[in-house]
Image 1 (cartoon, one colour):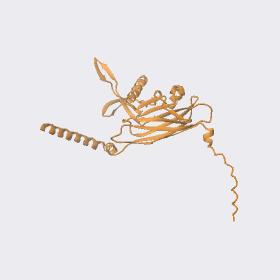
Image 2 (cartoon, one colour):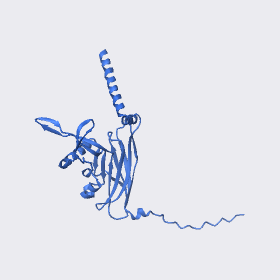
Image 3 (tube, helix red, strand yellow):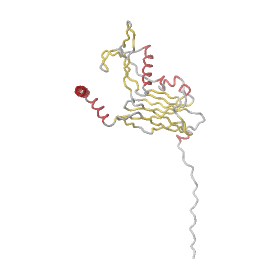
Image 4 (cartoon, helix red, strand yellow):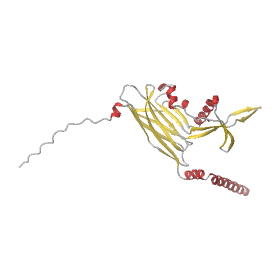
Length: 269
């Protein structure tokens, strides 16, 4: 005897998926890093980190993405070669008290095509607009073991000294600007590479991902990146900073022992 099958369940009307108001009505950018922490040890030869993100743009106006990565600030000591009575001598050193140890920009096209000079200067975006803290007052101090280091307002010479800082850091691959470094891999999805050289300073890095429309910044995403020493290098670094006098004495003793051992070896031969 056959049994009657139960009636089918009532049809449920499919609901349209809800969409975030921020996605549909607000122009914004979101970004992240493939690795927000870089470990530095004796085998460190640099690192390549991918920054990726998405642009939410419900309007018909095209948008540009600009990535700025800035490393920890550190003082920079500079001297200038001057000719005096036929002899080249170093000028009195000048100390910049706040230059970023690392700085890079990457964008979808040249910065000058994305925004005007005033906007870039206000935001500090680009090597031409990089904020480097110049000395604020005239005085002499002792830095890096050198006496009478001049820390002064550079006035008209500031731009020349500032260009020298940027030129030296570019030569060490610590400063870089890539006008085509941001690549759209799909509609609204982009990527950029952050290349850290082997001499990249340790500390906390700050990344800004700007979204521009019609020359105006309309959104920004802020990220952090940590570069830190690990292993024996970290232990030595922390010991040198906690007990500098002891560290210096041990280095002198080690140098003396190494010299004595080398002289003994060569004397036997």
